[in-house]
Amino acid sequence: MDKVGIGIIGCGNISGAYLTAMASFPILDIRGVADLNRELAEAKAAEFNVPVKSVEELLADPKVEIIVNLTIPKAHVAVALQA
Image (cartoon, rainbow, N blue to C red):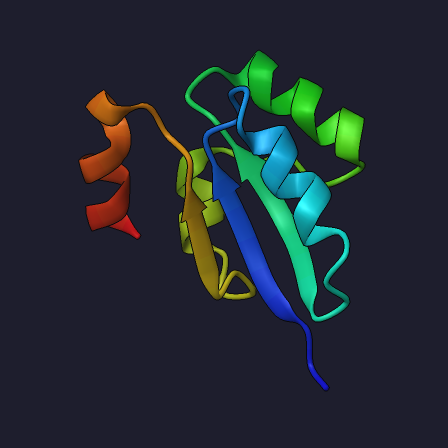
């Protein structure tokens, strides 16, 4: 079975719960995390040993099949529309 490529945009408090839960699903492959705050994304990527990308890179990556939008309400619609 092929793995499903996942990209997470928004690396705030709730992202840790998602990253922890996703690790228990062998079909999921987290192909990157992104946040408008690059330092926050880098910290989350290091904590969960996943790639860090810019929002634009993550959205353009053909290996990312599903975007999990964990952004703040102010950014949520814009990210959803881009996805």
